[in-house]
Image (cartoon, rainbow, N blue to C red; front, side):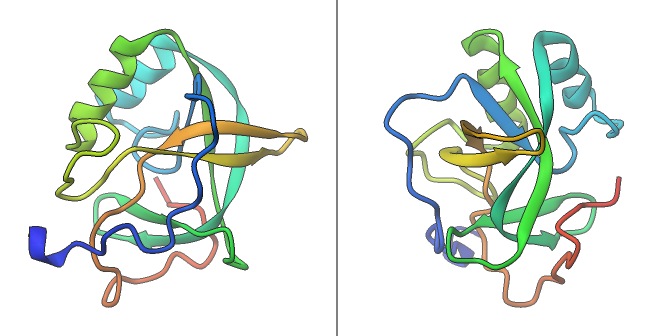
Length: 146
């Protein structure tokens, strides 16, 4: 699967400081039945809903996001304030990546800026999809159905 990597095409630029928040757009959202969504809900603080420019793809049981500042479409999700590095390490393991700058199978972690629905911008960690999206169906609404 490594030869199927898209090499982070369309990756948004990284903010200067390491974020204290994470933006989730799929199985880590509060409505998900994933045990890691429960972990995030209990070990981080929900901040609110947000969106980021990009495209969301249906990968089957979960979505894949390609964040792109030039995109006219948006990816919608939720923002949580992290309560320390242990939560982020557990989420890295769940997403199958070893953190920033690692060689991913499906996802990698990077920092972008999102727009909160209540107003304002915020630097956050995200898990973009690392694979090719050519044959993947686009989720036109930008919201993955859970």
